[in-house]
Length: 207
Image 1 (tube, helix red, strand yellow):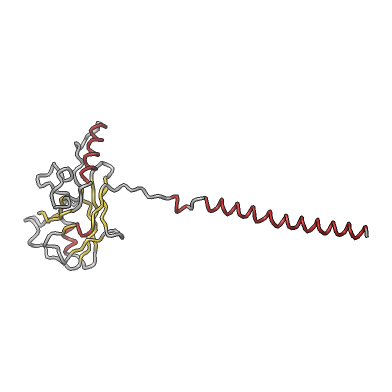
Image 2 (image 1 turned 90 degrees about the vertical axis):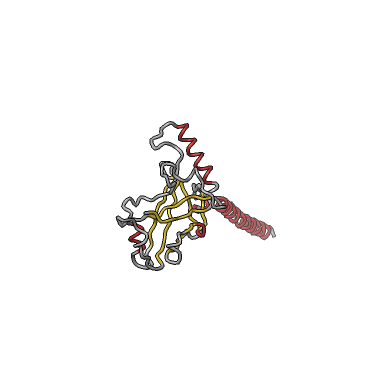
């Protein structure tokens, strides 16, 4: 009887130790799970910086009558065209155009065979925005770096389906060689404030 009791007690103690051991393992697993779920994923940690001073709708990039039906604007995936400030504090908009059909350019070019696509910043009601349209150009036009007046002309005369991206530059509201920090800050603020009204970009042909 005595031996049976001892064996019984040992068996019960063994069962209790086994049960306790089985309970401790899930506890550590749960803690690990909580720690893992609380740690943000690499994708969640990446937050893109929004540095656009304006965002235009593709339908508000207004093409000149000569190009309607022949050229279309290719927007971002969300249907918009962002406007940014470059490293020299100029407002800049990059627009991609796609050729739907060839356009004869004879009536658009100057006597030297040159032509340019230029633009003006407008508000929602179609009014020019003075603090965005270049003051050092009499026509107050946003222009591209096509100094020879050939890029857009060649595009219009090129192959259907081709695209071209043009960077248009506007007014930065400070002298070209400005170095005074306060004046530079004021110019940046003026341009940024004006960009809040930027709703339409009206394009035209210049020669």
